[in-house]
Amino acid sequence: MIEAAVEHDLTLWMQDDIPIRLFYAGRRWRVTDTPTRLRDSIWTTPDRPRHGLYGWRFQATDEAGETFMFDVYRDEDGWHVHHMYE
Image 1 (tube, one colour):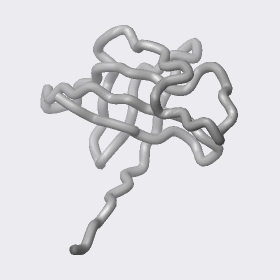
Image 2: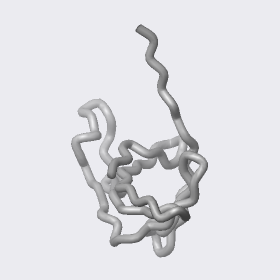
Image 3: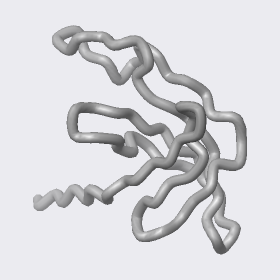
């Protein structure tokens, strides 16, 4: 069995340290709800140091009106999408 992982680049724009828009999977998205801070979540593992703010969960809508929820996190390489769902 062959497995393929697709990693899309994520660019996240912030205003007052809160996400307001993003570019992900070739689409422009704007945050359309109040983002929720994610701290010390189930994503953390015992061998990784905890840093307080771990990521964000928010709803975003693209230019065609399609809306998804995003869970994003930051590491030393920048911001990444952990999960995207309807």
